[in-house]
Image 1 (cartoon, helix red, strand yellow):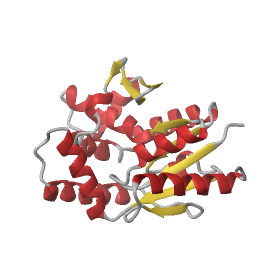
Image 2: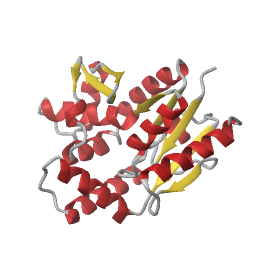
Image 3: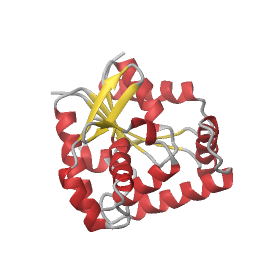
Length: 224
């Protein structure tokens, strides 16, 4: 039976990059479920569909073929055969993803696909509802977090490297709004699973965060 590790946490906590390193160290795959919701959101935008239109987004999602592949630079996400990886980390994609992720019809299809992938592979899966919904029986659950200010600063620096003009204040405001949406949606809201171990990275370096999670995983699985 495959070994599955669940990792949840708010936007900007560093889940994707930290999960990549942890999965590589363990020799297992990493599934970034947030990228799947971002792919739905950006596809809606590209097709002229308002992400706030639940009926049209859900209808689009029924026929949308999402897939992932793995390369040296990490997970690539495809929407109807198009590699959309390069446009998934914008603030526009983030806000669109947060909106479409509130729709029960979209979430049902995503959860089914994620569970199917995890059933066939040793995999670290990160997202918002992994420990509470997607992999509720996972033997290891991590809740990765940091203060809003720290998360906004990290996201701001990432966006600056990409040449965007967003201010820190705007990034912080968008992040707080994203938290509000994720934590208050009716279907599968973001919350810490009762049996998850919380890791606050506000005062940790990237390497310290990775090592702490590896320690928790190895201890839980009884490996050296």
